[in-house]
Image (cartoon, rainbow, N blue to C red; front, side, top):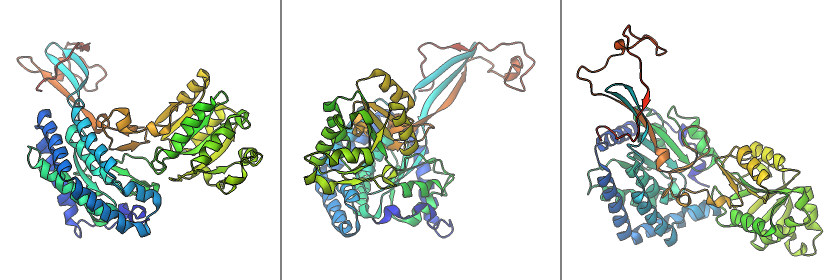
Length: 472
């Protein structure tokens, strides 16, 4: 593969050598600050303008992408090439994502807590944008539009860096987005795209201006960025998703869920890479699932029990080259292809323990007819997604109803799973005094806040019903 396995986090970041990195970050912060008085109607207008310009320039974008694909083909893996290719179907879905985001409620200015501290003294917790996002991604050019749409709607400015294999497409998309924004009140630097590794290295040092880094791509890419910046990083590394066939699994559901999880889009991060089979199913459900997978051209890397069963089947011989012993690293490998690792387990609790030890905490599914097993799975699996009788491929912002997503987070702080609009806001506390003389802490008794005053007032802490945002 090309650039995705480079180390952008450790690219030369000397601010004197690359002053443009600071200039880019500063411009993004200024654009963010200037945009905070732009209302929701204007942001919706900007999204519609983006869709219109992109729709009119469809062939220009697709031609740039064809050039990227042909240039990358000799040195790029099939999985990455699949992600790089912007098909007409992907293009249409990309445009639909803009409209879906535009139609969603604004995630900002939402009151999540409101209380009266004293007569005429009110406290509100209100959602607000994070600030400036630096999004670094591999291959998939539609990410440019996804991030731009989410940034416009959520009030966050964004700086985007795609892999060099998608440089032509990214450049065209960024130019068209800027063209669309120029017809609105949003600054032209609100969404920016950069091209070089050196710029990335410099930007990762700009914690004064950039508020969050979101890497989308390989494990190597994500970890290099996490290790090379002081800016908070939100993202996921490998997409090591598993499907577990419980002792009570229905054979029809098992075949449907497993085949879809593996074959619907093998190079996606929500594609299943491991199949766990309860030992009681080895001679019943497992052969049917295996035959369906083999019929879909899936290569199976099996442990000894599951392999022995397939060797005994009359239909095994034609598929012998596609059924292999699992190597030691089979269960920690993100295949991103039509390859599936298979492991036999004795119980749902063993399956949960295996997933928690070997998965990347992305999305894991169980196929079961037993509510107790389903409950154990949902409560016990330590992943962003815990599914019951459903394909892992459902782990997607569009399918969740988020319009689109900025990425998948497997972290445990702030946002988890597909990150849509709600994952791109934090909150601030707004306090308002309507008293004629204002309010001072010295008027209240000393309490637990430290330093209190000598006054005799007591805090009310009375919840405000049906609060209305002040200064909206």
